[in-house]
Length: 296
Image (cartoon, rainbow, N blue to C red; front, side, top):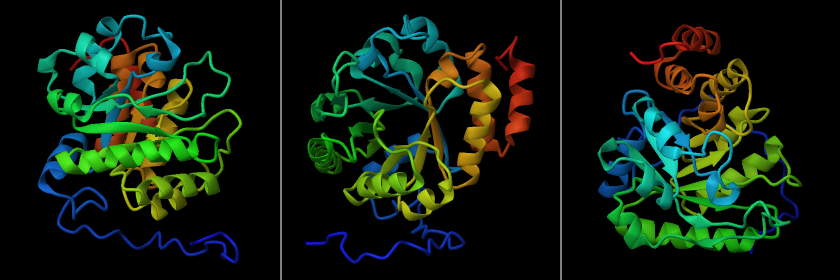
């Protein structure tokens, strides 16, 4: 079997060579079947090739965190300004109108809560594929713990979801989890995102890091960056701009949208970067202009 003895450090990332399109606009997925392509076309905008996801799945391990005390009050009004809603089945079923018309990326795994000492200890299949089909989801989100004690179990869970997802035409978004004791280096993210893609994830969610263009280059499927901790609006927009400029195909933000002073304006400003080639400065000006009256 392959091991890391005698491997040479990577040097050539071919960042000037575009990936093959294979006649489909989503990176690396031209050979997928019709059902998966159809769902990916709900997630990614065919014009920009990118996506804005709104993550509100924090409560499944954190409870009613700030900004998510009432999902029907804080999340539902943001639906018009994003492409994808990422939440748990309980949150989606109780707080998102079935008429919303947005792609659903369903948090499919269960994990330990914030009360548990080791939140990277592993996870399992929390949603049956039949329930995902009944909910007409566009993707399944699966947490993975690369480089932790839960790596083997979470990769096993990822593979099982990819198997059933392929069977029914539902793509899987592999989520790179980062615990407080885990690395946040370019090398780690190149390793983790590549592992998830090689196991069959159609999309990989990761964090922005130094030399992000290397991470994007070596991952054969689209990368979507996580928003992470709450940042000032201008800093969050700069992170989104840099990520998209360096090869990401989307942004999955939660706290940097729903904890913003003006969540709807922030969601729209992110969309301007992701879909309309705004710079971070242009997007921040847009945010300030629409802060008081975000709707158009």
